[in-house]
Length: 200
Ligand SMILES: Cc1cc2nc3c(=O)[nH]c(=O)nc-3n(C[C@H](O)[C@H](O)[C@H](O)COP(=O)(O)O)c2cc1C
Image (cartoon, rainbow, N blue to C red; front, side, top):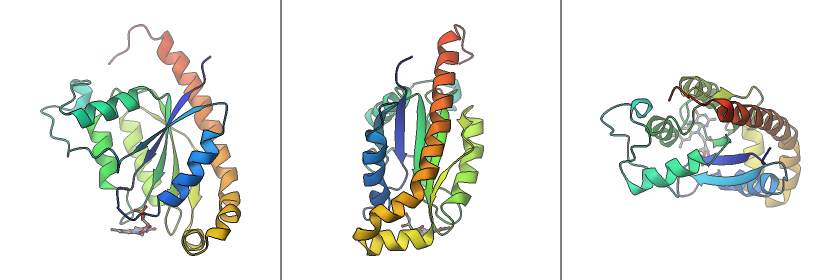
């Protein structure tokens, strides 16, 4: 079985964002693994127009309305699974992330998704809402998730020398999330291959 292609989606699009701190760590951590190949889809680097399609993407597949949509769609298509680095805004997930999920469908369908969140309570409230969206896209959301909590965010922001220590606290949950994600990525890749008549 080929090594699963995992797409790390970066949700925050802010110019000055906390996301860059865990993103640097995740690139190193996930990039060093031999049991997956990593691609990063940074929504700040790939701004999408607000979804304006005539019908839902589930009924109008890969009908990309712009170069930006086509580029992102191809990156999503190439993945066997996703891990989302998510912020939490007003106890929800970011608008940019919802726009991503609204713009595509078949690219995500029958694939697993895992989450690493940050915020006062580790982005948990955003992640729980994202699981509902993932279900509607016919995805498998993995049970385990990784979190960076408010006190850890403060240390990471204020003290670069503390990065290794804080990320060592987060790593067991990241590893567990990746174990689950890869199990599903392999299982669902086989299932997609075996499905000669997909319902899409
Ligand atoms: C509009 C807005 C709403 C926020 N709401 C929450 C929230 O509900 N829960 C939380 O834990 N943090 C909240 N925060 C604080 C964010 O966790 C913090 O700003 C974090 O740095 C955002 O991630 P980013 O910098 O990568 O965009 C909010 C921040 C903003 C800008």
